[in-house]
Length: 101
Image (cartoon, rainbow, N blue to C red; front, side, top):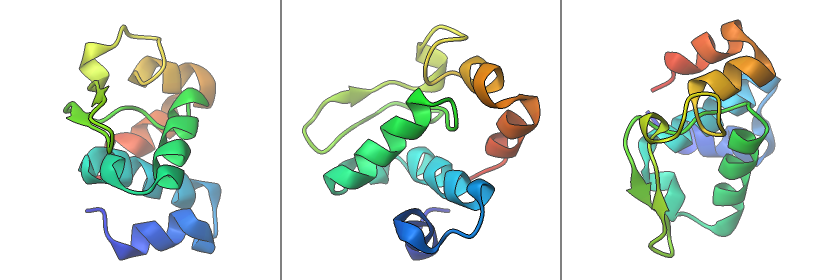
């Protein structure tokens, strides 16, 4: 569940890479974080582009009304998909993200 603990981890209190990206994945999965300040959206998109996080299981809209697709709406192996994360960060990393709520 995305909350204050995850926001704090994203904004500099994370102690490990796993903690930081798990907090970002939780933010992505919550769908609400896309409506937060610009730096949060940029951090989430950067993690998706770098293959450290994947899109949520449901689509949503950002602060400006732009549609954010779900991971099942993008082609497997492209940015935002589980396959892209596996390619860039490994199966173990993708499996860790799969259990983030």
